[in-house]
Length: 110
Image (cartoon, rainbow, N blue to C red; front, side):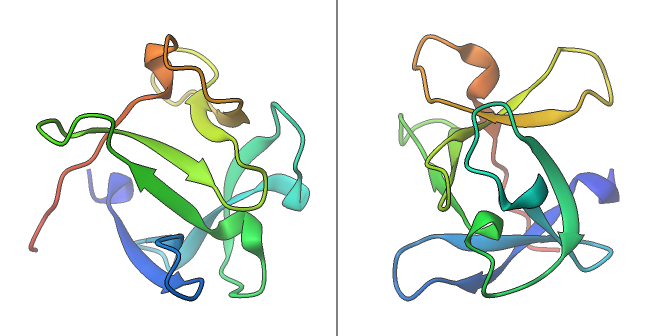
């Protein structure tokens, strides 16, 4: 499951928007730096000047590991396109009623 582990990279000022970098050194971003609803989320070369690579993790309940992940550039959240393994991820408007927009955040000291 190493391919599912991410670590924080650069932050925009003190905004709590960070780049998330995988084990291959690539950043989570939005295809084409898009602000459009439904744009695909991708991994790409890190670029500290690309605001579509910066994300905010928001915990609606501090007693849970579930969180929303907001994009700095668009204001949208991460949402998988289906429940299938390997499903693509897109950015969508935040809706508290959409359980698919909640992600599990686990702190790992490895």
